[in-house]
Image 1 (cartoon, one colour):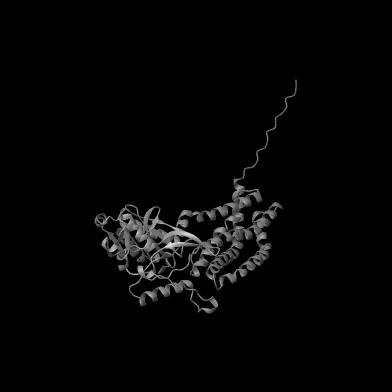
Image 2 (cartoon, rainbow, N blue to C red):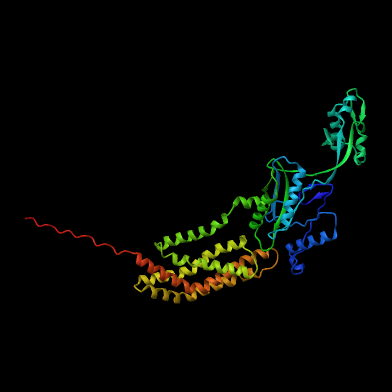
Length: 440
């Protein structure tokens, strides 16, 4: 059979690829995530004596064979596959009891049925059959051996030696195969070896040269992938014995390799906007009246995501970066006009008040045009709707909050910062006048 989890052949595995109907032909609530959960429960309740997994495709095509995370448990101390299998089972049992991760499983097993051919080397010496001849016979009859190529009617064909399928179908067929002795006699392998039924692993993965077992799973609803990875690392440190370690691979490895670089995007974005405004106004204090409105829009964006029951994912963070520029745009309209009024001789308070009144309509017009423009993202449906919904919700709620409260707080920030700036400004010193001494 074919294992869909490992993309390898196994005698006790099978795979079914399910293609979902378009969204328009499905009932409401039949999303891919919901179908994975319902199929997993239904299959495991109906079919006994088998491990059944329903796996979603990977989030990024080309990085792994399935969605979620993948951890490898490594035998770094040479403890053996049995110890590796037992340690992996303990880790999975502990992970499935956690509320942060779900559907944690492994395809690694040491219980796959197989046959072991035990060659009696004493008999091979007595019958003058070299051991390499025994191995060669097994290779040719059961596997295959390349002989040569020949040309026929302008085409090249490859000659491969192998026993026909009916003669290598049963384990007893191995005993009837023959190996050549040094005297030229053909000796049956049944007189040289014993076939035993045993169990073992059909596929041994090596990760960084260590025998490893792959553990797959996904984050539980309401928890991020970062929390799931942290939980698995803590459980691995707690449950795995000495000589057995763990490491990440595929998309989880890339996420851990990137670290918390995403946390640096927001302060760097704010710093970039601040430096641009500093160069624009030729002042270090005036841009603060604009930047101080940014935390307000982020607060309302998080509030909107929370009210709709969504999570803080990469698309939410993209919305935060977009909101930094949009929030500063409204504040710039007020601060720019207030500065012009102050340069004309008006007081700080009067300049801020007039700027807020005169810029009210342009701010409301542009802001609500943008807010209403992202409403289709909030109520999107169809393939990829969950991504558009979370991005639209973050931008909608953040822009709505900064529009309603930014009109009142931006003039306040401007007045407070300008007054602090005026207090810190020292009056220029008058140059000393030196009197000339008249010549006597």
